[in-house]
Length: 421
Length: 108
Image (cartoon, rainbow over all chains, first blue to last red; front, side, top):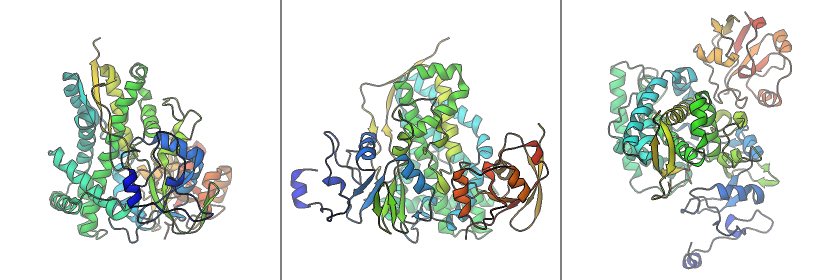
């Protein structure tokens, strides 16, 4: 923030005896004070997290709407995830959209039950061969070019193809689906997280929902066994969902089903570039690919924060949060705090206590699918590539807007060398 | 090891004979046989949506609940000290063949 801006809009001072604001703390050289809405200074926020865990494990950030408290240490985050009655997900009440992350029990249970059957490990295993075929085909193209940009060239296409198949929502036009999806997520962020929005997000979301309604009508008529057909029946036969809920829930599954997974997949390329010996390890031991996926989710997971509101006064790391406090649980920070060498990517870490896919009743619904796609990607890359290098001609570009939930690569360019033996 | 058979009573009081395979936790056997067990957290003893009732002597024979499980069960709908378990925390054992498992009520 420039000095001129600061003069025009002075940030408030904390009251005597209360937690200081992030902007009042002395951050180390090179780290801007952490903010609720990223302005580009916290796109890859791990250095911030390290400092927060050591110096401000409950960090109070000012925003025009309300103060927001960021919780960054492992035990504090885990404890809060386990106490959904104190750390409620209904930050906006009633929830403005049928996105599962916005509900507490019993509505969360009712809605999650509708979609949960499609995401059990047993149901997801049926997609394994299809994911592998798509992964191989996408990699053919990348290898033929000697590498390229992997977020658009690989990650989004694999994750979108897979979630489209699961929902039976056609996504031939990736760019349009990606646009609708990003805009709808932005609209969600505006309604549910006080994020700034794009100016066009509501109109785009309505277009996306109209498309999903037409698709669900067709799936209903065809008696499709897909997730999309199932949601349609819950709406039209069972009356468990209204039309609007059905459309929104379908969009939630679609968005959550590709956006976060794309980041995990892109980060997998990055990890292989940073630790080239892992290609050989997984080539010799493909059964370790699942461990690789779990460590990516811990070390460079896609979802960095979960939003909560306190329903009573609660003490965290020696600080008292009043009832009604807006809180962000930084699971991405907490997962780095799980081991002494938590900042190191180590495929042999025991991730049974990782928060990479969250914890508690709101644990990631799509975890088995995200894990499958990341596992297969690791296996396929190890089988086919001699090396992966970050392309020195392109810096990694990061996702903007990690004020919502996600952080990770928006564009990541690599050079690929195929194996010949 | 051969499969066990469970006698499961759902929330409407209906009985189901369910196959329990050795590599499954009790929760996985219920969920993979399409019983309405949400198991939201995926089996990490962090959510209590796989809460079941077992016979008191079976619960006793399973030994102490972990601290994580006990903490969640105390607040779970319909908790009964002598009968309640999180099914994700119950591993397969041959001797559990034929036990009765009753799905606990969901949170209101």
